[in-house]
Image 1: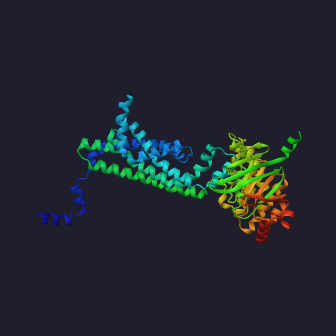
Image 2: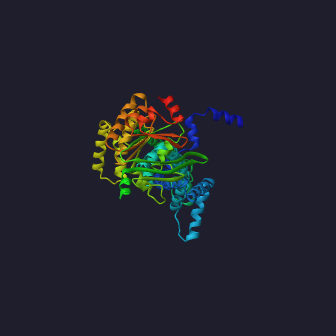
Image 3: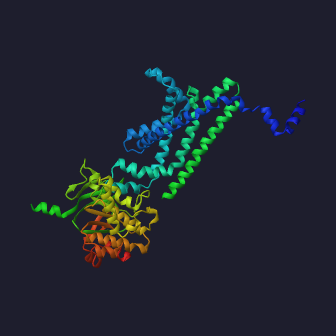
Length: 239
Length: 250
């Protein structure tokens, strides 16, 4: 019996395989706009977290190269904690602890932005720190010899050179952020993945909506990747 | 009254300057004066503390002890605004250290614009004038990576001059250059010295030191072993160490 079945399967033409998978997007056609709206949510979420995370990461990186020891230790301990705890745990903690601690009824979106900012800040600070240390010490000395103070020295001289060197790493970080953003679906934010799951639950079909969002995520990541390659080439040309 | 006049004539005063890195004593008691408009060439065997001495004059190295005065103001005093002092002391480095992400013009106008808050049009005009002075006005809009070493160093000199310092420090300005580019940089430095600038130059260019400098400091073992006019130093050095050194380099 088994042998016969295997034999039949092995010879089956591909159209038949599809038919057997019952892949039929018509069944979720009316829900596709609902799912696509999730792109906005996911992108907004990623963008806000990436920008805030970048700013916070830059500040943390300055802490970590500071000669003022308390700032240095804070930066190091902070990074260690956020790197050493699973993102899903921090996310749940912030989502469920905030109302209990402050009485503020935090939304899934807000909890997500806060968590991802704090978390990506820790990772980005390491990247930026390495980037700053890789800039020739002579650059800072040249600027200091001209009387340039710390803030313009960092903003105009050191960080532009550091960020150029670490641009690929920063893009990788945003890609990771985009993919990790799916975690907010666990606390009720209606992102792309959450919407696919909702449609699945309504229609009793999971394969089509999930396949759809998988493709959308892949396309978004590819756009980021290509954009970063173009940006890198342009930066290289400018020097 | 007399004292005030002498003070005005002194650009740099160094009083019992010591500098150690950990247990390594690099400078041991340097006391000297450099007068306004004077050009001093600092020479000596490698590792004798030439660069460290120079870098103590704008506090890129913090002296371990001792005092440094620029224009009569003690820069080694606690709570002194180091950045304010550095505006007045230009420095040119062995490896140029131009800002690679800025055009030549932006390199030169950046400090007047940012530090002195000079209006943009004025800073740009000043930068162009300085680039003209070092013979590089046509390179104003290119990035430093497109320049030869000699050109880079001339831009670096223009960049330092843009802050209108009273004192210029040169840390082996021609040591990283191909031989055929040394002259163009020395010519610019000579021109700067003729404008009456007070200059301290760490150099291995003995011909240049002899021609342009008013005084030679021969540093050995972290001390100024000899301090003499160039003719005297090069024709009849007093110490054995200086004689040995000159035999090797001349």
